[in-house]
Length: 101
Image 1: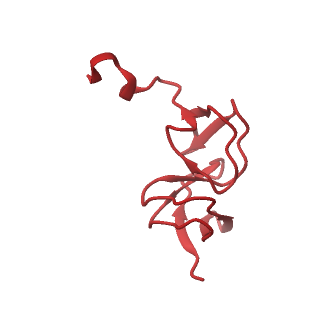
Image 2: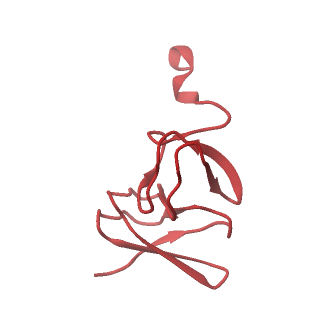
């Protein structure tokens, strides 16, 4: 089976961004600083979406670009899709603004 590719933006990141659609059960690899990190997708990861590289317990930080981008709203397992269903942004949710504006 072909390994799918993802991008890690910073060595501290606990998520990677898929550069192609990944099916559940497929292996995903990303390289940063000569180190390869590999996980198995637990669900479909659409192109451009984030995949967890490690387990992220509920309430822990989600790190991309070496920066906090949010906190997990529930436990995230390595290989899970990381998106608004399991992460709360630290600057609020624009999609929940009253009136959709």
